Length: 123
Image (tube, rainbow, N blue to C red):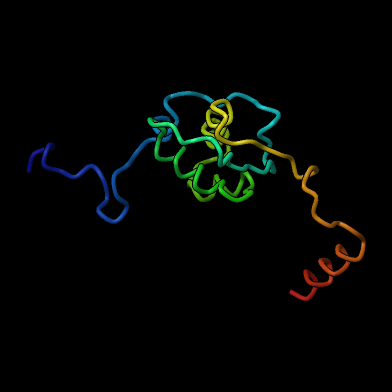
C-alpha cells in the first residue's frame, strides 16, 4: 500500500477539516455586540445570499428563533471565537441582529425567580 492509497481520515469520523479552514484562515475580532450570552436572531426579510459557508448557513438556520451565541457554537461544534467570527460576518451582511440578555423582556419578577430556584433545588 502506498501513502496515496491510505485514508487520511477515520471512516467513522468522516473527513477532517481544520478549524482555520472553516473560518477562512482569519482570527476573530473582539466585538461588543457578540458577547457569550448574546441572543442571535435572523432577519427573515433579508434573502440569504449565495456563497455562504456551510457553517454560516447552519448558523442562519439555528437563528430562525432567538438563540444564544453559545448555543449556536455548540450546535456548530466550534469554539466561541470562530463562532463569533462567522456570526460577525452575518451581522455585517445584515442577515442577523443581536440583543443582549438584559434586553430580553422575559418576566424576572421575584415570584418567577423563586419558582425557578425551587425547581432547581428539587433536582
